[in-house]
Amino acid sequence: MSENNARSLAERVGTASDPVLPTHPDVAQWRGATVADVDAIHGVQVAADRVDHPTWTTPRHEVAERFELSHVDPLRDTLIAFDAQGEAVAVGTVTLHPSRDEHLHVHLSGAVRPDRRGRGIGAALFAWQHARAEQQLVEAATASEAVAALPAQIQIYASEKDAALERIAEAHGYRTERWFSTMHRDLSEPIPELEPVPGIELVPFTSDRAEDARAARNDAFRDHWGSLPSSPERWQQFIGGPLLRPDLCTLALEDGRIVAFCLASVNEEDFEMLGPNAYIDLVGVVRSHRRRGLAPRVIARSLTAMRDAGLGTAVLDVDTESPTGANALYGGLGFTSYERDRVLVRHY
Image: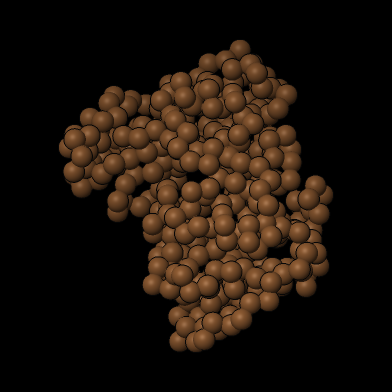
């Protein structure tokens, strides 16, 4: 145990009382969220998306799903800012991952309407989010001696173009720890035809393999930076959601067991800016089957399925320091970098 972790998590965090609601002259009300606020939250997010990353937008169902998660209390874990006319102008969320196995992980996300930026609303919102995140850590540590000994971190993603968020987070002790690159692949370009791997069968995803796919995902990502196990609840939201395209997904089976996968989704709301495209949500190989060429084969099969479905572009995000060499893999399959996000982290 490190010297830092020899102290309890509560000691490492320090005082974490109830977060104080921000005050701002342009905000008439700050309050927690209820399910009745889904459209208001989504409206803020979409307005921000159009400026921050115009090639993709946040689906409404992703906002709604947050209200269904058993480990999230929207009233305490989400804050919405309303102006004097009752319009939502900013929203911030704070999510403590339910895993208590190796470390505690809090993820922050938020958005401010573009026409309300540059006035300090985002800074006020972030201060509340940070305070709530620290409170979540202390509450978790207080509930269990084992949890109190775990390392913890709070993190937030920010576009490399978002210097304001970088400054705000750094003022609270966060530092850029990782970069993720968004990559695009033109599906009109030739797709490699790779020789089969003996003993491996490539098939589309089917719902009866959902739990096996979750187990494979958790094994494949166990040693990836920042990755935590996907819970049955969250996994069901993903594989049972409206955007997953089983026909574009590929599973690699050995004796009926999933040993590699490429899972993809389609959000037609993104077609306006990028044209018909598919997003590759997850690519992975279970650790016992790495270095056998399975990743390029599941990806190539999915790319072919996307092309045959009339889609023009494949999109994915990758950790630029992936331990499996994913950057080189995707580059070799014709993907090129489009934009980057930094991950700002504070450790405890």
